[in-house]
Image 1 (cartoon, rainbow, N blue to C red):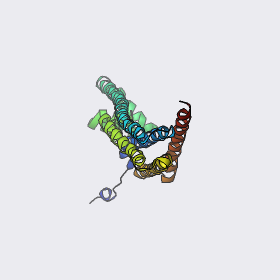
Image 2: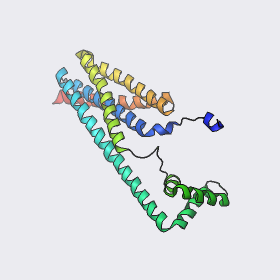
Image 3: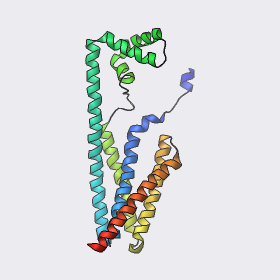
Image 4: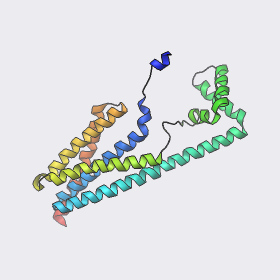
Length: 233
């Protein structure tokens, strides 16, 4: 067995596509639904109105997240495919110029010019488009846009995140609903930030504090708006 087989590396960058959509969806689900619940409750809303608003926010938010992710990631995918099509045409029409372009990329990275041209020749002989996509365009299989995956991940995680403050609103007594939903949602956000940082190999405390801060700010603002409108309307 070779040394490379024994030295197996598990790089976390392969998770970036679904992890970004998952964290964004869950974070948005908790923040937006908790803020909506706190705002309606601060306006002296009844339990039924709070639950209706929260449920409507869950459904609308999940669909919005799915549509938004699908459209944005599809745009990215369209751009990637257009660049690949252009590169494929250039390889067919100007192979020598493309080979020199690839070699110059390696030379700028510090490879000896003679060796850089040999590497470019061998890579283009095996997979010319793949070599240019990776080294010229910066495209790879791990970072490729996947609209369907992003849409479903965002919708599912938004729904899961939104269900947490909605459940707290249902089980928390009316007089302490605002405090109960707010505190529980901040705890959920801190756990989400920590989980996302752990999955991505980042610093856990920093991520948890960052997510919690913005969630607290959003809920404070919507509670203030609900209180003002509840007394003036």
